[in-house]
Length: 88
Image 1: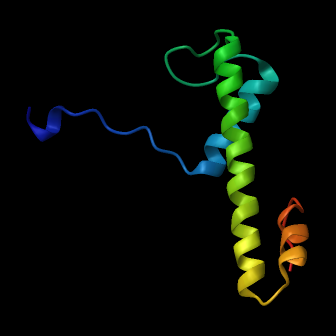
Image 2 (image 1 turned 60 degrees about the horizontal axis):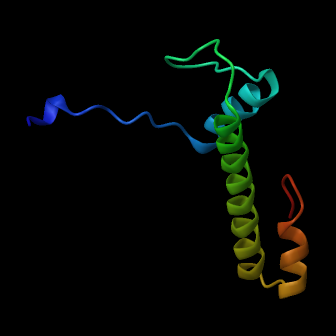
C-alpha cells in the first residue's frame, strides 16, 4: 500500500478534545463527524466521561511532579495536585 493511501490521524490537542467532549455530554448529541446531530449512546457518553477523568488524572500527576521538583514535601505536593486550576 502506498503511503498516500493511509488515512490521516484525527488528532486534537487534549484540552480541545476535552472541551468538545464536555459540550457533547451536556447536549447529549454528537457535535462532530459522521454522527453529527445523533444522540450519544450510553457507551459513547461513558467513553467521553472516562476520557475527561483521565485528563484530570494526568493534570494532577503533572502538578504533583512540578511541586516535588520545586522542593515541596510529598504531603504538600499531594494537596497542591488536587487543586483544580493554576497554583504556585
